[in-house]
Length: 396
Image 1: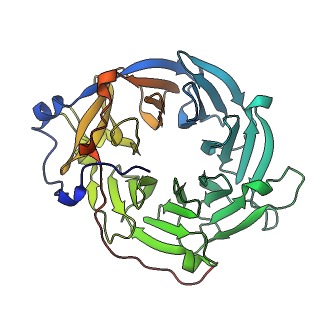
Image 2 (image 1 turned 45 degrees about the vertical axis):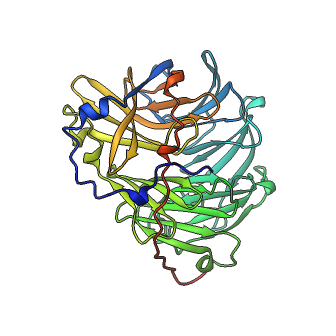
């Protein structure tokens, strides 16, 4: 993964400047992303929980997880075309992810502890199942999942259940049909004390996994080790409840919390080297910090790295991209025409499209003008080196 440009080693990250009084300075940097495509996923009052897509081609697919437990697939090019609706799920969807090797295979994880692989060439037929049925046939409720970069390993994070929170592992090459026996490799259960809300494998290192939990910890594991205790290489305390996390560079992470804060961490740091509160999301005098929210941080090549954030006002639903500049968040892209509170977003690298989904069940595709591609080396986020790690005792 490419390094991101502006060194935060040189920055004051105390965030002691208020949001107001910066509008004139920030207005000069705003670049508008044009609303290109829009479609409502259903006429009912369903909202969209999450979105993912394929990266391999200029015309791409996206999968949207809907609150009625269905998953709707679209083809995105000059138009937004619905291709398939998957309605086999028996519980709320907690994650969707396309195969990195085939645009026709989609993995769907549901809260009832089941992960299915669906073949879109066969109208979404379930071709493999992954679950934990080692304990009297009772599956553990899932809260998150991810696939390794080489798509050999799958990890699922569970809710806090029976006094423990688990990270479960499956070998995707040993996928089972509905009639096969258990295909679970094993799991960790001592590193988190509450729901495992997010899992993300390293984009290049197939055996490195980061996890986040409502217990406030972000843990980093080396899966080549023989026990959970040895595998846990770093444990970072956010002092909050982790909502989402992702890899910022090869050895640093971004993290968003359930109280709408953003933290940037070096993997072995004793504390976050940059932290932004909910009040930092208020970028104009019309913004009420209590009505501001963050969606997701994107460390992407298609744009300069940005935090997608929104705010609800009397005039409507605002949406904007904020970049980390010096000791504050500043607007870098403005999105005009948003109609909903956005729940998730995804970037298609080849076309530079930003896809947003949200609480009114609308899929929006935003495209940037040619002049808005900002790939300057002045916007990278280098990590600030720190120390501090601790291990928990008792191996898996």
